[in-house]
Image (cartoon, rainbow, N blue to C red; front, side):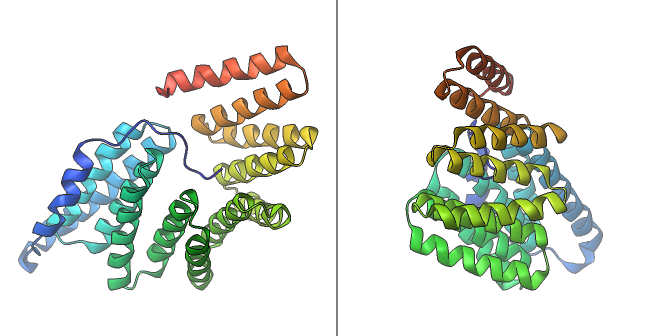
Length: 278
């Protein structure tokens, strides 16, 4: 799995703000204090959107990202626009609207290229690569991940490298290359644990669990998912917990332990209902 989790939907306001992109004008220099205030407000809105996103509240996240984009557009803040477009793209991924997601990531990437923001471009390439992977466009996805990883290494961002490496593992997994997938997942997991990035560590562990399940190593898969749940508990990441618990329910059912299986499914369902997931 990636850090992204099942969706609630994108707000109707998001596409409207994106449409307004064409009508931007640059603010005059004598309004620099206004620009600075709006820049900071847009940053705060994106941060609030991220908080809602990681809590599984995608409707609120969409509203925050939409407002951040509108503010960034008012002052022609290209870095802020790119950040907000990227975040909105993630929500379209959650909605499984892959063409719209790819469009947002490409727009964000073009903006980051214009302002020579390598780190931002790496994020956009990684996300675009993941969308291509989900659509079965494996060759294009691989090219995107390789470019993203190169930029992350140039930027010295170890967390970014781990995220891309995990996604390269997912690509190998989708292509049936189990050994390569396991190598990438383990490499990303080591980095995530060293960096204390618990959500990423949980995602890597879930991916290793899926690999073990595919290979018939059910006990190993249970161990991986149990560790994944423990990592998500450290950051109270409810969407990840629901995913991990569902996996444990499925695995215990395969072992014939129906009482444990039902318990895990019930706990996962409780979380999903609290989050408003269907």
